[in-house]
Image (cartoon, rainbow, N blue to C red; front, side, top):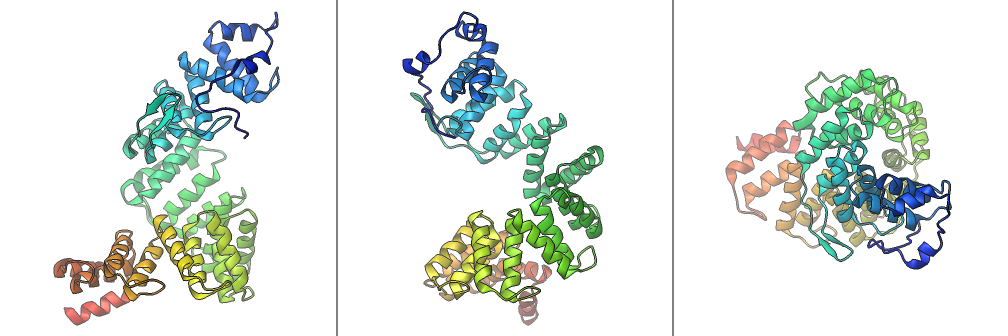
Length: 419
């Protein structure tokens, strides 16, 4: 949207001159006389071009007037415009202030945006001549706000709550499972994103239920019928591998291609892997690189890592080791544990970069904290050998045991030689 003015929202006399006060324009007259409800309504008319010519600058001016006059709905409207940059520069710090006022006055639709800001924290900023302090993250408060809004059948709030609970499934799995179970049972037309998260709970046993991959497939099918790209991509993976259903490679590839048409990053990455292997599709390294790059541009961490592999080994493109390392770092920063592990290997072995035992330990430890078996193993080995960190035999041995328990055969073999 075109930006008409700065977040100070100084409306010049020239803009006012564009609006004549007609004798029968009672809404404009009431707004100018300070009636907050009229100011909000007038802002809406200017925003949508209803009953008068659209003018985003005037819309924002009247939204702010009504907001500063204490009208909760206007506080939400004005805060959302500041957050999205609709007609102004984006200003999360100022948006947070107005959205907080709306939430405090029970405007449920403000809860999602306010909680999202609160969950991640907000950098400081300015609003006109005023300096706004940064807001530290408060994840628990954000969750409580979303829980309250979800109880009022606010579906967007429930979906955001589900995403946040899923991020820490070991802690919140039971709550997540029960919430989605009730929602999908009660709703005649459940949101497909809710179905996707619920399917993950069902097939993986999140929340303490017995894992049921077959039921997970059925739930994903319901979401896929709504043309939800993530549901289609996940369903394709399960059908391809025969997980919870009869394996059907041809159907899976077809479904994966349909998901790509709907811009699914997961499907692009999966198809890229198939093209690299020439498995149930033509061997096509160039096509794989293109798909990885498309998905990486959408900030999908596994695709970013695989794009790094392409640059590292010259798959579908020229070798470019600095670019490979940039991709690995970017994927690791986005939470991809395999990229963390890959960086550990690079710094340990001096591959694509200079050897750095301390950096290797750092990335192996990050991978270990994310539950990566190889990360657990290599962190344990580093602690045993004192490479990149002070030696700690007891802790190193414990990490090797955890890696072996997670199915790492190298850790199990090493333990057999030690115990």
